[in-house]
Image (cartoon, rainbow, N blue to C red; front, side):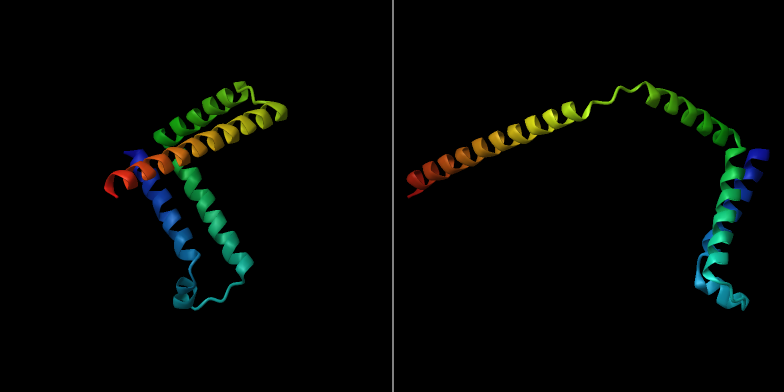
Length: 118
């Protein structure tokens, strides 16, 4: 039940940030704010909404998922620049060869159909 209240608070803060980003809100209220203050208000409301959402059960599960994903990301062995260049050249060469093969096959089949049809 308390999670539902937190989600409602997060939703209201998010809606406030969206409304705060529009010119219509400030025109209807009659307040003239500079762009910097408007951006700061929107960022603050978004951070508060994210904070409220992250304190829920789903939010804490999401944070745990991010921590585990970061651990797994650190285990990845990235290719060296030389390996990357070699792999890229192989892919480009294979794509060129397959494209040339398909072009020649298409031309041959087109010629065959022209011979048959007339």
